[in-house]
View 1: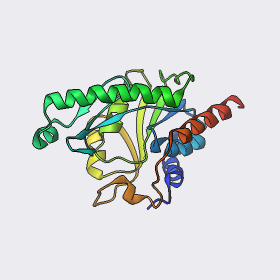
View 2: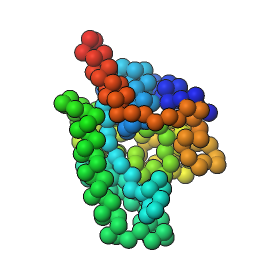
View 3: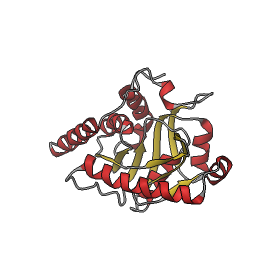
Amino acid sequence: MFDNREQAGKKLADRLLVLKGEDVVVLGIPRGGVVVAKEVAKALGAPLDIVVAKKIGAPGEPEYALGAVGEEGDVVVNRQEAEYIGATGAYLEDQARKRRAEIKERMGKLRGEAIPTQLKGKVVVIVDDGIATGSTVEAAANSVMRKQPKSVVVAVPVAPAEAVERLIEDGLEVVCVETPSPFFAIGEFYRDFGQVEDMEVKRILSENRATRRTR
């Protein structure tokens, strides 16, 4: 469906051109989401920054998300799913504590000495390379909401329809290019879904800052 994250970002940007001219900030969820977000920020002429959220995996299956933790420590958990697979409250609390520490470390590593972009009163577009359950973007959106933006838009190239519907029911505006079915994993909809390294994320953020300074 998508050649790579850059192409996906360009297709997503086409859906967001209605925001051009608004006071927009684009936030990518590291790491892959930042590559997609780069194209959105470029198309909108907007500053690019990161918002970090980490998923809480199921016991023994860390890739299966039961929830996620946002930058401000907010926890989003699918309680029904957690109960069904036997994830105890103690397990979820322990995982949330670990994820908070990882988020703090990741933010410092990727942002470095750069000052976080002001979000108050802005139209904030949160971008990832796809949604599986929606927990990660919901946790990210909860963190962003604390910073008093004018509005928040979650934007992704691909997601299952039911995840998009859940986010909309929770009051989020969602822009999604494709909602294929069946949906097993985000990577199946990319020909190239290689791992994005921290250095690539730092380079993308640095280039956006440099571009903004020359305008």
